[in-house]
Every structure is written in C-alpha cells, then in structure tokens.
Length: 133
Image (cartoon, rainbow, N blue to C red; front, top):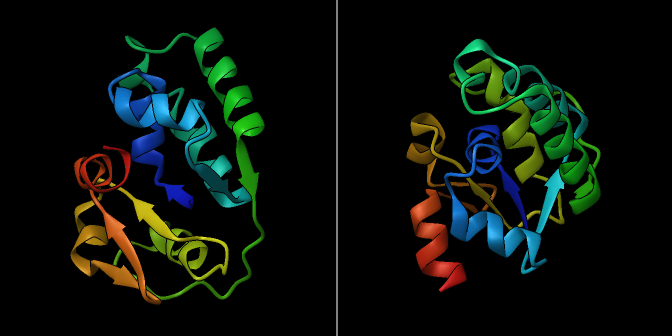
C-alpha cells in the first residue's frame, strides 16, 4: 500500500505520538510517498518554536534523514486543485498521482472531503483501525 501522510501526521510521528503508524511505517508495512512540496513544508514546520520542547535540531535532522530514506518521492505538476486552504492544494495534487492509494490526515478541512479523485482521506485513528489492525 502506498499512502500520503500529511505533514501534521509526520510531525506527530517525529514527536513520537502516533506509535502504531510510526511502527508500521518503520517496519515497511506501507510505503509513504513524498513530494518536493511536502518535504519543504515538513522542513518549515519541524523547527517551529512550539515544537522545540519535543524536537531538538538533532532529532529533526535524524527524522528528515529517515523520512528521505523510507519515503518514495513522486512528482506532482501544477496547476494544483483548488481548495479552501491554498497550502493544502499540493496534498490534493498528490492524491491525484496514480501510485497514491489514500491520504492520512488530521486536517479537518481535508477530512470533510472524505475522498478526492476516488481516493480516501482518513483520520489516523481510522487508518490504524482499518489498515493496521
């Protein structure tokens, strides 16, 4: 299975709060797909002040290295689909890629869509219940 983990899920994995997903990902039970846009956002979000109590610079660097090793890059083309939050347009574009099967996110606006191009958009708890257990 090849999926997209939204940046909010990747941050939770980096700060070690989504153990079932992080354990399954690291055990290669599914493949996480990445894009240049996703990596740029992840690199921007991880060092933010509100995360400093959870993540040192060293932990951030190690997580980014791990993400690069364990994820499979895909290329997405503009124009990206229209969406309420322009910062999430690339995520929807990733769902349009033929290799992507679903998106795991805790973003309420994305979750309200439920699907995009026939691919499910699901909450992490639903992913654990429906795909990992």
